[in-house]
Amino acid sequence: MTGLMTRLKRQLTTFSCTMLVAGNMIGIGIFVTSGRIYKLLPNPMLILLVWLLGGLLSLVGGLAYAEMASRFPRAGGGYVFLREAFGPFWGFLSGFSSGLVTIPGTIAFLAMGFSKYAGIANPFVSKGLGIALIIAMSYVNYRGVARGARLQDAFMVLKLGLIFLLIVCGFASMNGSFGHFAESMPLSQSPWALLVLAMVPVMYTYSGWDATVYVAGEVADPRRTLPRAMVSGAALVTGVYLVLVSLYLYAVGVATPENKSVIVTVVSTQLFGSVVGAVAGGLVALSVLGCLSATILTGPRVLYAMAKDKLFPAFAGDVHERFFTPARAIVFQAIWASVLLVSGTFDQLLDYVTVPSVFFLALNVVALFVLRRRGQQDPGVSVYRMVGYPVLPALFVVGMLGIVVNTVVRTPGDSVWGLGIVALGVPTYFVWHKWGSV
Image 1 (cartoon, rainbow, N blue to C red):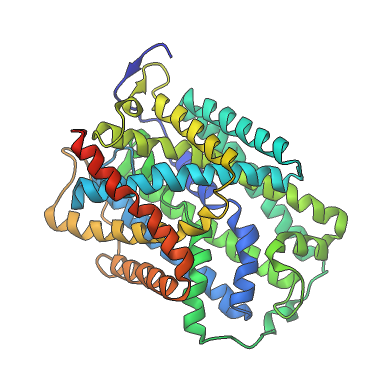
Image 2 (cartoon, helix red, strand yellow; image 1 turned 45 degrees about the horizontal axis):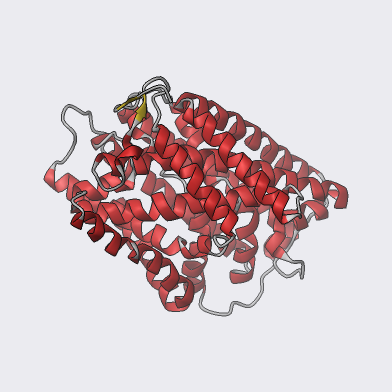
C-alpha cells in the first residue's frame, strides 16, 4: 500500500448501481427459498402473491432509502441514517450487525455455497476455493470501486442472460403443465398468517435492494442515480422472481412429492432431463458468484463509515491514495469472512440474521420521518423526495414490523438467536465509549 488519503471518489454510474442492486438481490435465495414457500403456501396464487408483495415492499423501501441517501450521500448506508436520526448508539448497533455479522457472514456462506453448487464435495477443497474467491474478489475491489463495479456488471449481465435462457427454454420445452396453477393443497393455518410467515424467506431473498446506499459516497450525482438505480433494480428483480416462480409452478405443481428444497434442480430435471438438470447447479453457482462480488463491494463501506465516526478502529477509515477505496476495511473484511468460512459455523447463522435485518430495515425507514421533520441533510446537497410519503413508508414499517412480530411469536428459537447477535453490540458499544473511542 503506497499511501492513504481520507476521501472516496464518486465514479459509480446509474447502470453500475442498478446492476449492484440486482446483483446483491439475486443470489442463492430464489433457487432455494422457493421450496420453503411451496411447503408453507401450497397454493399457486398465494405463492405468486407473496412474491409480489415482497417486491413491492422492496420497491417502497428502496425509495425511502434513496431519499435518505440523497440527504446524506456518504458511505455506510443504514448506519449513517440511524446515527443521524437517533444518535451513535443505534447507528453502532446497525453497523455492528451488518458490518461484523450479516455481511461477512453472508460472504462466507456464499463462498461455500459456490463450491456446493459447483459440485465440489471435499470440504477442504471447498473451503480452500471459498477463501481463494474471497481474496480474489476483494483484491479486485481493493484496486478500485470502478474495477469492482465492472466485475459485478459482467457477472450480472451473464447471470440475467442465463436466467432468461432458462425461462425461455423452460416454457418452450412443453414438459410442464399450466394446470399446475389450478392445483391447491389444504392450508395448515389461515392464509393471512401463512402469508406473513412466508414473507420471512421472501424478504431474505429480496434482501440487497439497499446495496447502493452503502457506496453512496462513491456514486456520481446521487440525487438522480440512487432513486433510479433502486427503482430499476428492485423492479427488474421483482419481474425476474415472478417469472422464475411461474416457471417453477409450470414445471412442478404444489401437490407433487418432489424434494422442493432443491427446487431449481427438480424443475430443471423435469423440464430438460437429468443431464441438463445438473447444469442448473452451474447457474446457481454463477448466481452465487455474482452475489458474492456485490456483497464484497458493499460491506467495507460500513466499517469505513464507523471508523470515520470513531466507532471502529481507525485503520478502517483509511482511503488508498491511488485506488480511492477503503483499502484496509476491504482487507479486514476479507480476513474476517475467511475466518468465518473456516470455522464452518455460519451456515445456520444466516437463518438467524433475517429477523434483525428486517428490524433494522424498518427502523431505518422510521428514521426518514425523523429526518424529514427536522429537515436534516448534509450542507449543499440536492435532496430527492420519495413519492407517496408518508403513506408508503408507513405501510412499509408496519409490514416489516408485522413480519418481525409474527416470526418471533411463531419461531422464537431462530428469532432469539438473531436478536441475540444484535444484543452483542450493546456491551461492545459501551466498551468503545469507555475507551474514549466515541
